[in-house]
Length: 136
Ligand SMILES: [Zn+2]
Image (cartoon, rainbow, N blue to C red):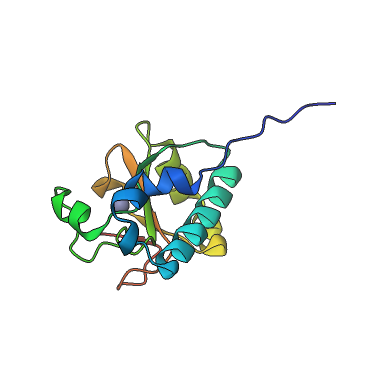
């Protein structure tokens, strides 16, 4: 019998990046629920893609987001509705582009890979355009 290698799922601690201590008061129950749902969907996606990835940017409290170069003012990272995954070889971005039906099934939207060199931005809410793959 073949033993299938179990892929480690991303955890809330990976997503909060330790910021849940210093910014404890900003992390409301609503945001915590959003974070759980974001991870649930992203872990499903990674499993389908057969890839493991590290979080390069998870939750961003307002002050952190303001200090991130190029971060959108109303970034969905602030509300725990978005995640950036390390993707130096672009394999995850490429997989997503080739499997938009899976993104739709799971409920994820992808920032266009042209705008995210070395990482992959996924979010659980549609952008204003409603496009599955969107320009920032
Ligand atoms: Zn992002």
